Length: 113
Length: 409
Image (tube, rainbow over all chains, first blue to last red; front, top):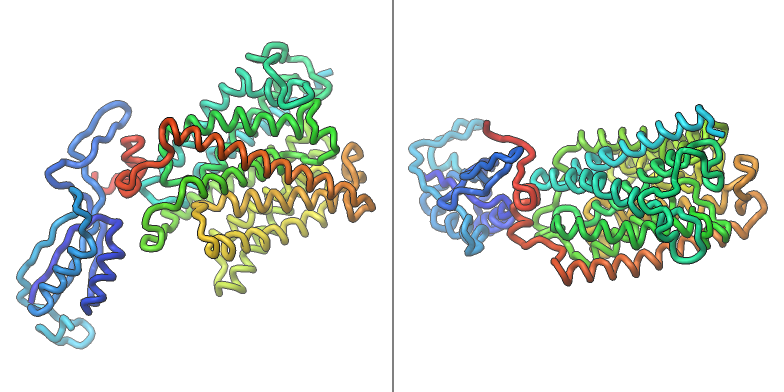
């Protein structure tokens, strides 16, 4: 089992979700985060004082999947989120040792569903 | 002779109307996405600055200096000749500058209404230039025709107590033109924009309703019975319209929403604006109830069907509401309320309705044409729309290098 964490542009969320649904990946957690990549964000000016290296709004997706869904999920996220511009985001694959469905107590691959 | 009561009331009304612009700023600000809220506030506040100065330099002169023809000319440039004694043709009991500053607040809020149409995608520099040109070449002439000495719509007998044509239809149709020229926001169907801060919308509505008493009742230019009439019908129309919109939503969508009540109340205030000094309280209820029906249809049925992106419903509420209000004035006006007005259709004078219709059509036609020209010119020289990338990132960061809310300290 793997936990896929993706950081994407906020405006791409709907497209990514659609692509995931097409791949039959129906479980997702979304949170709003701040972050930046190598370009170090956008300058802000507050009462004349410049602040650089500022954090931009991003969306963070967390999707737990069984092994056979890893590649389709990656494919879907890339398809939905890619623009070719700087700021498209990243996908991290984490090992997921255990998963439990709270309602039934099921564990493992079944719980991911 | 300067009357202290009248002067006090007009000064307070001027302050009330000014407060409507920050009120509008929050009304609109709450409706846009988080990343664009400062841009809306900024647009409103910068208008307060720029048009306050434009008005005293030449805007007042162009609008109100007595003259037949296109506009008032520059004889009152820099308020030359506009002193502290009353100018009887406009208001016989208050200092001329009191009348001037009261009108200034109208000139300020009218272009601010258009913000609702181009929110979230207009370049700040283009917006600034557009607003200045629009105020000078659309608002000032129209103001002159309807309210200025020598204005041809005034001479025709058109009744517009506080700005149904000059403010609401004017800004409303400019809004429609704007949305058509500017185009839709990017990715609208994928990313349905929802109001990011509904409490701001409510706050804004409260300030608008409060300030509108200055807008309408202040237009009596005196602390008298007519002002009281305007005050009463203003509140009544807002209340009827707010309630009506809630009921329509309840019936049509299953639940009434605060957004609906606020939209309705504003629509009610818009509609009563031209009528406030001419109609009595029962017509005010009718005007309020019906404006919500018409605006609701415009916003919830016609807009989705035709697909134009009037982001914050400036056209659906202000133009439609204003047209209904102006025509309703032709229906319900009564000399019993205001002897220096006229009777409307329901009081035996169908001609007034025709005059109102002419005023509405002239406003629509003129504003539509000149607003389009101004846009084309501004677009030609500096481009009106932000790039797609800037639109994604939000106007606050890209146009102003500012962020409204800290997420992480």
